[in-house]
Length: 238
Image (cartoon, rainbow, N blue to C red):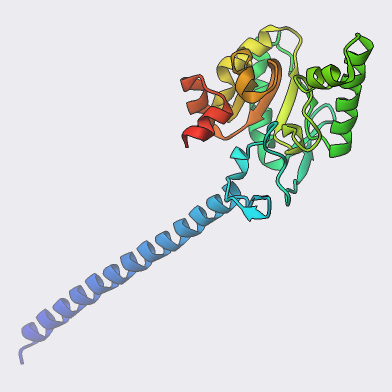
């Protein structure tokens, strides 16, 4: 065999080996990409899911859409990991970052000052104290026992039925009322909703609270805002 033929075959072999190497490398990269992204997706789903138990039955509700109102109590097995925000109140650690982003952005509608979280996570005992105080207030104003309870429940949730016990509902105070107008128009961008609009009291069971905001995630918050519905209506449609 001539030297020219040997050289030609060697070049063909090297070319083939090079192509095979690139194919294997690409396949490995694609496989790793798939594994890596599957792992990321699983982590996201893990973060977004919470095995809620109601009346002994797991519901599979996403943590950010857990419904707590006058008809839906805090889930049986609910637990919360808390982190402190400026001012001393605590919230679920999962909403800390979007909450702080929203508060810093809200400074433009609050005379340049950072709005304050005046109420975040509440224990059942704390909620009971607030509930009892509100009933006592209405009794002092002359309401009967039953009427005082009825009036109080318009403003303070029955212990065990308060979003504040979840850790991702907050009451916000500002230097000016304008901050609430800003929040109503912009909170959805950070995953929060104006939870108790005045026009939805017959559905939410709670009188208008311009200071009360609840985290539901950006996707849900955007739809709730654009459609002008409350959380109960949004979940019913789902």
